[in-house]
Length: 73
Image (cartoon, rainbow, N blue to C red; front, side, top):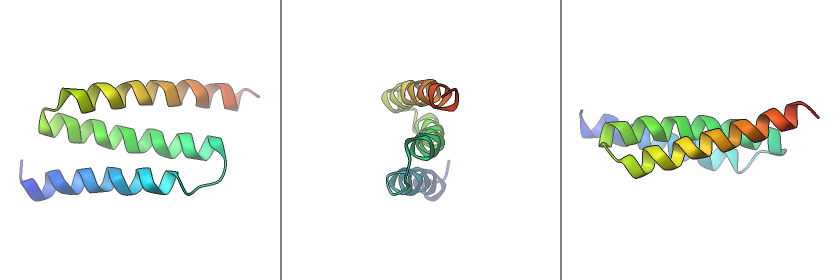
């Protein structure tokens, strides 16, 4: 894959992740962080970087678990 596209995917994940840190409320933060981690998973797949894929997949599962608990309150 073109390195410009690969870098763009990584930067999109970075921007989304940084944005998630600026929002108020745990629910919004976790929802946006989940999206950022999904983008990072795509980035890891493109790079064939299994530590990124595994780490972000675990983060997605943790965020989804907490989102489910926050929603049920």
